[in-house]
Amino acid sequence: MSTVAVTRLIEAPVAAVWQVFTDLGRRRQWLSAVTAVEVLTEGPFGAGTTWRETRRMADGGEITEEFRVHECVIPELFVVTSPGIGADYRMTYSFVPIVAGRHRGGTMVTVVQDGMATAPAGRFLALIFGGLAAGTAEGALRRDLDDLAAAA
Image 1 (cartoon, rainbow, N blue to C red):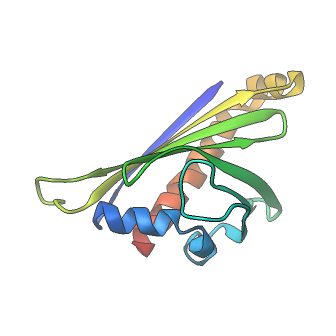
Image 2 (cartoon, rainbow, N blue to C red; image 1 turned 30 degrees about the horizontal axis):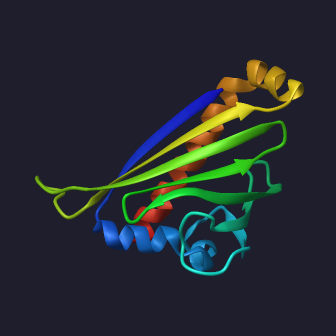
């Protein structure tokens, strides 16, 4: 199992950051790596919400993944899960308002991604490429939070 955590200060209130991040229909407009989003469930963002997201990879290829909101506490936290090929992922996003200091009114956003190999081949690859995969995931998560900061 591998864990990657990234935190980013966003100079916008929690409500605005939450609104941008959870508006699945507009993700493609502000996430630079996303080329398509297909929302698979109806209704407001919350536990049970499911969507497919296609992203451009560093090598120029694309990958489509399905995400499902496992837990949601508006506007503080949500947890999404995604089955992968040989590994499952769980990402926990937290949104904490900054109430004092020079960044008062801003939001601290943290994402923690946990990956767990689900097949023997996935476990073998995790041993060989674990550090590389973690670095790639960290870079992608940082880019997403930078895009979120620009949009919010």
